[in-house]
Length: 283
Image 1 (cartoon, rainbow, N blue to C red):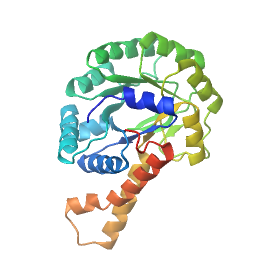
Image 2: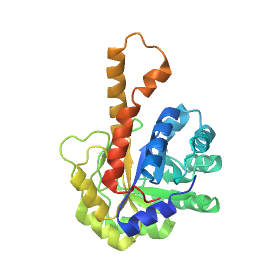
Image 3: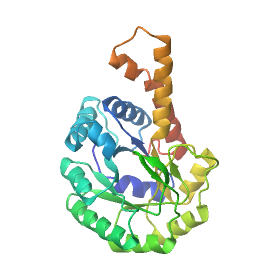
């Protein structure tokens, strides 16, 4: 069942658990994620970066692929297709027109005023199509789709202003997480996270979920985090399993067997994250 992210994230906020956003990069990854989430009876957000969208052929290809998998695999859980880190108003509109059910407009590199202006235009367009919108404020560190950034913690006042003036559905405030691998211990600002939860009363998003200790993930959920993005950890698990398989099977050249070699490792990460965030049987 293809849906936007409004109900699943509001339910998570009210019942204090989180929904995983697992990023997809091809048909097999989408299938692995859908099958494992169906097994756990959990809603899921399929994150698709602009780079992954281009790699898979385009926005319409991604939507049709996911719709086909949902039908052919008899997927009955709520599934959201979400544009991850949309870099422009145009890319968000293209995703919406193609059938993405949720988009993120990432205008965090601009001034607050420009961020609000861009986000507001995306929201106005998205609402006409019953599509949910995520925005980012501050700078989430690390590397995403080849774009590097240092951490710049989001200010509470700026978050409130952005939310009030744009009417977004959920917010990704930079509070110490990074994309990719951490260098040292993650330093999440839980006090500010809790303050935002109390003031905004809306689902918050934690980007860079890879490498954050389980106890800190659980504390973040207590402080209002309702969506946790997982990408690097899936990539690492899959690639390590495939490398091992190829090392032990030099004669294999069938790409189906090679890609499938990472299925078990990927699904182990997916199941572990679902259990960690508490979304099993929450459809």
